[in-house]
Image (cartoon, rainbow, N blue to C red; front, top):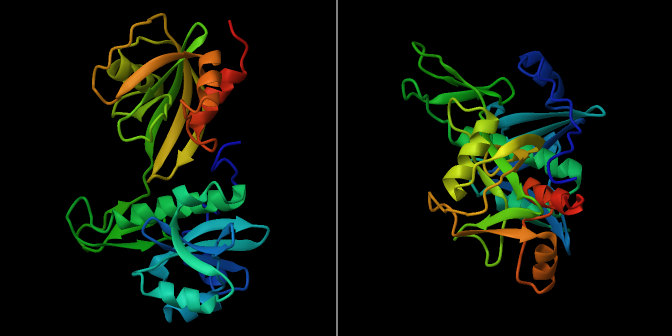
Length: 308
């Protein structure tokens, strides 16, 4: 299973907006807080191990003196334990974190650095935390009137502070499609110029307004490679908090052989057989995406399938 697939939480979406619900739990012994700053997570490191640095309410108050509810985001509950993130205003609290935990090093680390080292449950919690933190950081002002917004309803709504506007803003997710395209017994892999040397992956792109997911797959494939697709089928999806995407995976087929890099988004794209991939990897001449990503899963599921 690839990253962010395990959802251990009851998010309590039906009651988390109620002040009485948060009041009942936020200072309890069952409340756990994860400090976050922008796109980084407070992480406890010890030798080669990494873990999110969860804190009790009392530990959090030692860190920030006064806990401001507008910086809280409720993640959910598991087995009676409630999980929050707390949005740090600046980096000055990092020294306090380190002094309070002398037995471990405390660092602010990005999720790309962490998720390979975390348990499935922790990676899911951190995925939600980072996606929500990014949304709050990028929606400080109302898109309707320009006034400041404030967080409430457990961090899942930001409301315009102008009494004449009071527009509510909700967390957003950017939908992206990603597709394994095959032609008989070969798969299409491409690479961007910014990627590590020898890294190749399947075709991907964002969904545009007015499109179905399948239409987005067909458009992206044609724009990037000039290929016309058929038999487009949904495979699986993966939340991808870099910063706030949902990767929707597909498989598709084409009868076209010639690749045309139409929009120059790719540096190159090629057809690979199963033997090509195996041999190139053995010779360290090809690097596939991370095993924790849906892009790798799409390649792996094709490699596992029987040749036609």
